[in-house]
Structure formats: structure tokens, C-alpha cells
Length: 186
Image (cartoon, rainbow, N blue to C red; front, side, top):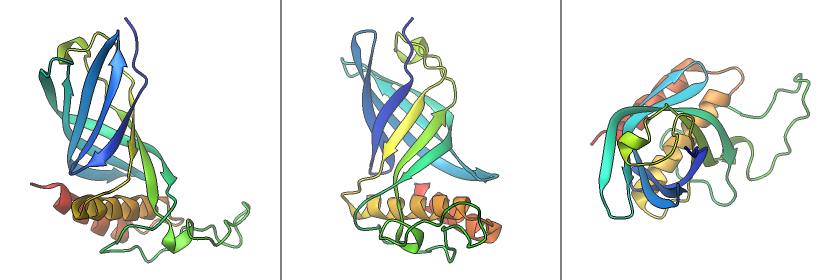
């Protein structure tokens, strides 16, 4: 049985939407987060996973967990943020790493362009996919085109920045998690 390793998607409305090919068949992919939690310095999403076949038949599984594995900064104009973290993501002067240069994509003006999530193992055949979906990485490009998408982009960017801060401010992380959950609730 072939194995699917990663699925490219983009933030559309409230969902991560994409497609992939497996076993010679094209499949639509939709992940709709409904809840966000943080554990340590990781963002955990829980949501509805829907996979459709080329005939349009869709199969779904609820409460599928996605754990943020990594993120990549974006280029261009940062999304508006309601609750911008009051932290500086750049390393401290006494940090052994070289400090990041102060440009539009670092520090307070930085934002997330791509999020990489590890999806929990799902049964491919039960979702109509003739492939192993036990270890899929979901790559989510954040390129908002609507106000709703820009609002979510800002919330994800702020929370990911707060989780990466050294030292991490748990109060800020909790505030931003509550805000993201507010946006994710119907």
C-alpha cells in the first residue's frame, strides 16, 4: 500500500483545504479546527478531517488531532493582530546564537507564513483512500484573502510567536489560546 507523507493545504475560511494523489486517485482534503490547546511549547488543534474522492463522495472523522511541528515566517505585510504579544522573539544579547537581523520579517513585525502539523494516525481505507495515512504531515500555507482569514492568520501568528518566546510568558499564551478558540467556535 502506498504511503502519504505530506499534504499541502491553504487556509480557506475556517479550514485548511488541499488535495493529494494516492494510488492513482485524486483526493480533496479539508481539516476544520474546532479547538486549540497548548502543551509545553506546542500548539495542538482538534478538528474534523474530511477526505473526498474524485466522484465527490466525502468521508469524515471527528476529533482528529494535529500537533504543530514547526512554522516558517512569512514575507510581505503582517496580518492585523488584536492581541499582539508584548514579547520580542529575537534572542537575548547573552544568547550564544547570533542575533537575528532587525528586518521586516523578524521580531515584532514577524508573522507566520506556513504551519507544519503532524496529524494523528488515521485509517486511509476507512476514509476512501487506498494509502497509508498513519504519519501525515499537513503543511498549511497562510495567504489570507478575506477579513476572516486575516483575523485567523493574525491569531495563529501571535500564538506561535508567543510559544517560541524565550522565556515563554504562559499568561500571554493562555490569552492568545482563548482568542484562537473564540475564532474557531461556530
